[in-house]
Image 1: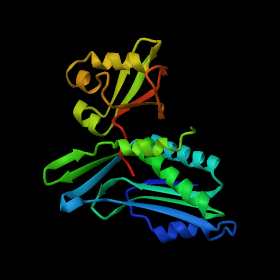
Image 2: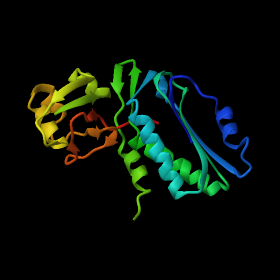
Image 3: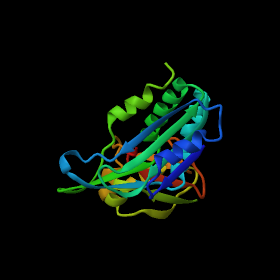
Image 4: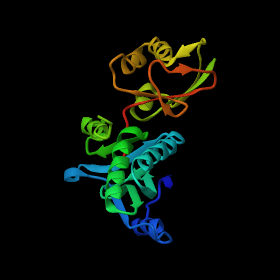
Length: 149
Length: 84
């Protein structure tokens, strides 16, 4: 498992390669790449704040939960912090498994819980000034659908 | 007992503090701590009012109102998260 919270950009190809290069039991890797939206040119900057220490723990807990639900061989989660611009990559979740079903499901699960449980906060700068992004109810609903009935 | 308080994002800006050390009479819970902070009045009473949407973590784990507090605990107060 690789968990990283960093200001630097990451290399998608290198991260995906690392998941299967020396592991012939891997047959499927699902990746999710999140990028900064800047609708109609309004957003000039997106600043990402986090809670050092808790963030890494929360991400590891989410990946461990995914590993307990699906046959995950390995997983990588990288989240950028600091100042980003529209079109920049913010987050990468890559999950390796033997078959695609586990990889797809675990990747989506990790993203849903990252959005609602990992302590990151976005502040966007628009022509109107700086503004903290509000949490969305739809993100909470997305995480809740994984709860046992 | 002394607690280490941390504030993040919009609440850090509105409350005007990122960290502080606070002494509270033991035993206490998150609910007791919140009452103590609300008693400061002003933005503290407004932002941390019952029904406002914020989160508390104790020692870097999400906590609830009845979570007990111990000396040396790290208690973080922050808005709902918006990463990803």
